[in-house]
Amino acid sequence: MRRNGPLALVFHAAFVMFIAAPLVAVGLVSFTDKAYLSMPFDGVSLRWYAALLDAPAFLQAFQISLVLGAASATIATILAVPAALALARLDFRGREAINALLLSPLLIPHVVLGVAFLRFFAGIGLYGTLAGLIMAHVVIILPYALRLTIATASAMDPRLEQAAASLGAGPFPVFRRVTLPIILPGVASGWILAFLTSFDELTMTAFLASPSTVTLPVRLYLHIEETIDPMVASVSTLLIVGALALMMVLDRVYGLDRVFIGKA
Image 1 (cartoon, rainbow, N blue to C red):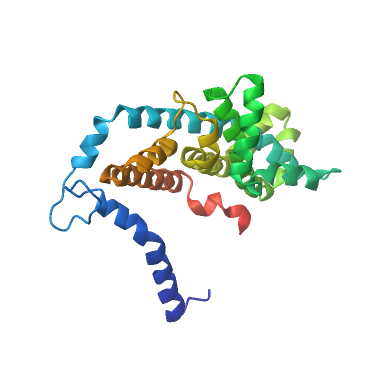
Image 2: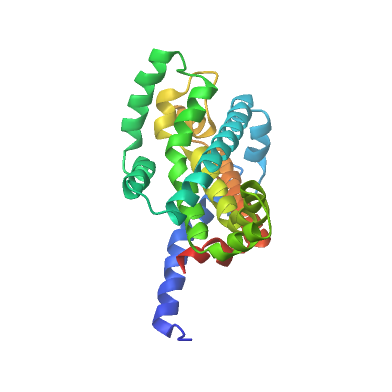
């Protein structure tokens, strides 16, 4: 196996530092004891983390984002699994067109989607509702769950399913006992990526949220419009740590090498 040279290692280290530096800076600022954004070199405090407990608007927005992200990611994953199996395993007319249609939300600006969903939901009475937000989020996060599931489904050996069927197993038992366990790393990683994308979505959600369905990104945006204080950094730090924790759980349970095996 060819190893990276010294220049490649230096480049990779510099690239990682460039990406991680803003995240580290946000984390450091969140521990300041001042009432404004400042690096905590002259005093470390948990003041702004404690302030979150006295901010019911942020706590409510976090709960809404959590429910919205979990529900939309689950629905998107349920839709992505049969679609991914069909696109990866079957050869039929219109296959590429269907694949392009399912991935098309990646190409459409979220501002355009927000305006379109606003007019649509206002016409059917779903504007400002949690159900409307879930429907809209499913559309924009479906491609993420679909691509990772397709990657693992494409790498699966179809002879395993054929062997199970030859032993008398029906279609559903074959799927439950053979297919699903094999593609589960891709399904789980697709769910996590879809959840994080939904949880972090701001642009489209700003058009669709009502005062009773304000998500955490929208709440942060409204807070920054009024004032910029270290509470924003503390919330951002918790989100960064939460995203890293999810990725560590995924790596611990399945291994990232298995998740992306279809791309090898």
